[in-house]
Amino acid sequence: MTIYDVSMTIDSMMQVYKNREEKKPKITIDQNFEQGSTYESRLDMNLHTGTHMDFPLHILKDGNDSNALDLEHLIRPVKVFDLTMIDDSIDSSDVEPLDIREDDFVLFKTKNSFEEAFNFKFIYLKEDAARHLAKIGVKGVGIDALGIERDQKGHPTHRALLGKEIIIIEGLRLKMVEEGNYFMFALPLKVRDVEALPLSVVLTSI
Image (cartoon, rainbow, N blue to C red; front, side):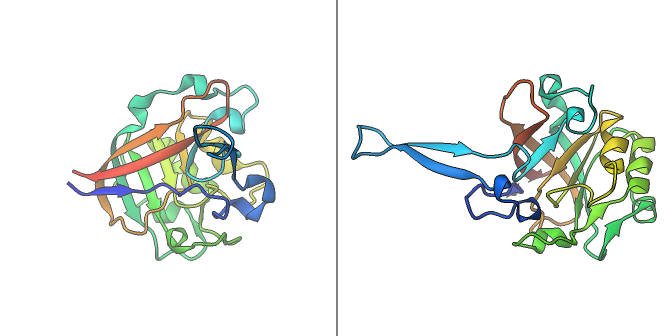
């Protein structure tokens, strides 16, 4: 069995959305061996930093938050689609020919997976593609960008998916993963009452 860790590594110099300073993780030492008998560190970061999942509350005022977490939707088969030929955005004409069916969880591999620094022109999912996926009735959509959309006024891509309780995973790293079917283990930190959760995502061959 081949195991692919498709999560971003958390460190203070990692790629963050729009290079915003407040998005960068801060790792500090609470205690070292000069101060005591143990070594302890502290991590301070935005919940949308690195690989993470969005809950409807991220965009929808009365949307569900992390208390609605259901691991059955995150430990399951997934389909990875190679869209590295796309230069700007994924629209409905790109996803309509794909073998996507009701209850599928789809992950889109794009040029983003090959970018180590934040690219302000990252590949994103357009509203029409999101609406097409919602109409099919997918369970989740993952992408290898720190945002599933790029500067769309009103966040229509998020709304089209989260409005239908479709899981969004952002910040995947799919460079080493070929198109195909995999089994996904997407394990979040267990935090109550929040709009996003950091994820450790592993794919295994089926």
